[in-house]
Image 1 (cartoon, protein in one colour):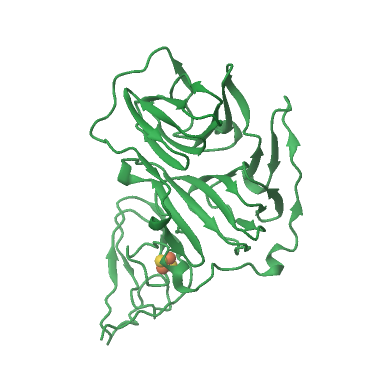
Image 2 (cartoon, rainbow, N blue to C red; image 1 turned 30 degrees about the vertical axis):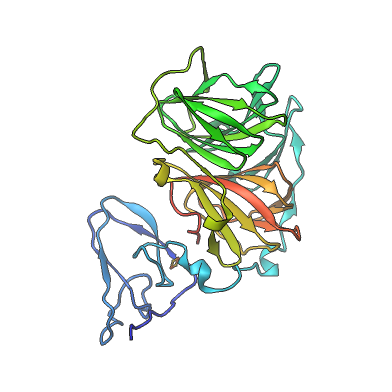
Length: 355
Ligand code: FES
């Protein structure tokens, strides 16, 4: 019979590793020096796993010993219980509720939480508009993002201009409406709840083919580039990456305790820097946790409360949350029918990895 590793902890260990230095990761779970080996496996079938980083790095090493990507956490710890780790009431006792304040032009509202985390209501600052298209920006380096920028395009009818973010990868989510996208000369249909990947040197145009508004959340990485409107569509579709989109499919969801996740845009579509996913959360208030990534979250349905260390604010469908790397947070769902959200984050990886 295969020996089972001991679950030494229900979360990974965040450690700073030095380039070229050998590390021995504990695979049995019995070491007193987690996540590293102290020899406690002796006499068992376990062996430590040797790892030599190529560069100095901060990584999450698995402490539950159930990962399939040893020595790194792959999120398997979330499935060691039936429900996602819930908050202790005392952890949340001192958070002050933050109100939304109007932008200077009165077009949108922002609620500022701890350490640069914020929520934007009504899409953000206007970047472009004509009779039937508006493009607004809600995340950029001007608002504290280090890696991402995010725009919201709303198209009541017809098509957008040709849009380009030179040298940046672009990941789009169709939040409402039905239409298509032309990426550098190639057209593909984009039903609602589709994620789309546009390569770094390509341009794109969104077209609304229905009677309802088409709403697209456009995430750009790196985000410190200007949106360009081109006179013509370039003819440089990267045909090595033919498959560019994935549409929500309930049968493909992954579980994370009592939550569901589905990655739409990731390395399978050729996207190198970011991952886009849909998350489904029951009514719950998760324990404070962190990610090593910078994230943007769009609330699709359900109401709740976004908590950071000392602040909280209500969130409703349509709100956009910016979450800096390593920020302690909890996105509480207060809705009996649950919450659905779209998240996109840098660097790419699994949305299940948290600490
Ligand atoms: S701590 Fe083991 S998979 Fe995350």
